[in-house]
Amino acid sequence: DQQVKQNSPSLSVQEGRISILNCDYTNSMFDYFLWYKKYPAEGPTFLISISSIKDKNEDGRFTVFLNKSAKHLSLHIVPSQPGDSAVYFCAASRTSYGGSQGNLIFGKGTKLSVKP
Amino acid sequence: EAQVTQNPRYLITVTGKKLTVTCSQNMNHEYMSWYRQDPGLGLRQIYYSMNVEVTDKGDVPEGYKVSRKEKRNFPLILESPSPNQTSLYFCASSLWRGSYNEQFFGPGTRLTVL
Image (cartoon, rainbow over all chains, first blue to last red; front, side, top):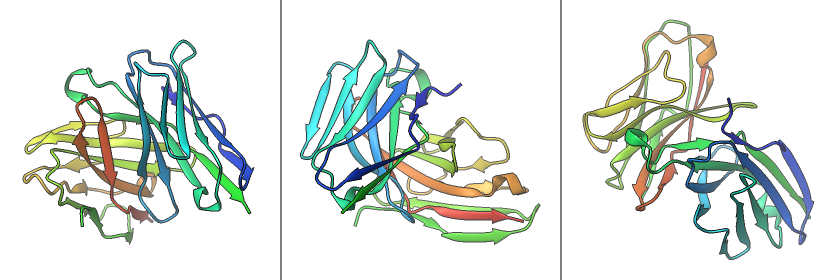
């Protein structure tokens, strides 16, 4: 059963507008969440993270929101730029889980297209 | 430059012919991991290693082997590749940030098994 879900395979946004990428999880033991960005022909790169003790983390144009009761997080990109066009992966971690401490569980990804 | 390198970047092979994909990191990370990315399935972990001589299975380990004899290297071995192992493979190494692993990924190896 998929523990981290990104239900939108793709998203198209106009340059300058807000992009909102969503992620849901099922395992309440997850205590850290990360977003990765992936361009074609490159490996994923870390973008932003949030601990389960917080509900918001901001880094420049990128903000991640966490709603623990709904087991939902979202990544907001404001304003969106054409260079943000990439696949975005949501990932979750169970840092206190035995020998697999720190293992990341990834969603399937959302392909964001920002149009000029 | 801090990086994770993988070789080869592209490989076409035939069923049953043993192959090794190498992975090396120069960041002195203890944790290393292999993933495969398939359309509609995202990134799935194959094997991981918490340190030298310590390896464990991820979510999809069947058909793969790994070894961790040195800290910097974590090769992925396919003893008898099959067409269902055609995929995009990523190696990653992690800096432990006290509460989570920020994983640094290599550029990927695209493997085709005929």
